[in-house]
Length: 233
Ligand code: DC
Image 1: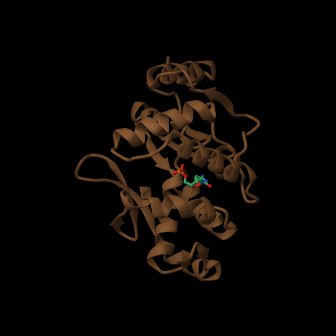
Image 2: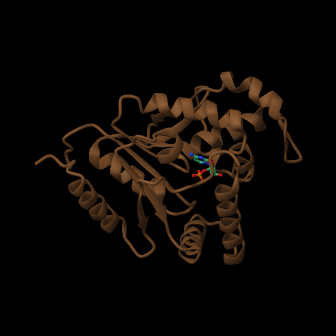
């Protein structure tokens, strides 16, 4: 798929909607850079754990805010050909997906100064365009002028089932009720936090991918590019 100009694709939506899978496929197809902005919030969470800024789930916000300039995050392909998240030069991809970080990240992403710091970094990464970024505030705050904004959604039932199947396949012992509760909690946090809550941008296109395969989503995306006259003739 070739485009007639370099653009920014902003992908926002609820957790466990398959945003990253879709964003990665779009980036591969367009030969663009893919940035998982959630990984950046996760990296800051890991940094605060490593630097003992979290005790009994209380965060030393003042300490963290002071240390923000010391947090350097970048993305790089590792020896397996997959893109990893690096925190201060170290590959932390595995650690940021673990339970400790997953439990903390929602609170970390509520901190205004953390958001300002990461949004600036995200805007820097996208200043040359040719980027696909997924998150919660990409079309509203990070790239309000993105040429394509997609807001992804799927029912809680569908997302619970997907997440359950994914964890079971990875060998985790989980119950479906536990997963549903976690998804509902995360939706609630994302929608109701004070700083940059999850919100559909006025000019975003909604994609409910509840009953769509990834190939169907890619066909939908191609049609969207066509309707915006962005595909090279
Ligand atoms: O997409 P994810 O589940 O890896 O995101 C991790 C957390 O970061 C989640 O609690 C939502 C938050 N987040 C955010 O507030 N803003 C973003 N642009 C991306 C993620």
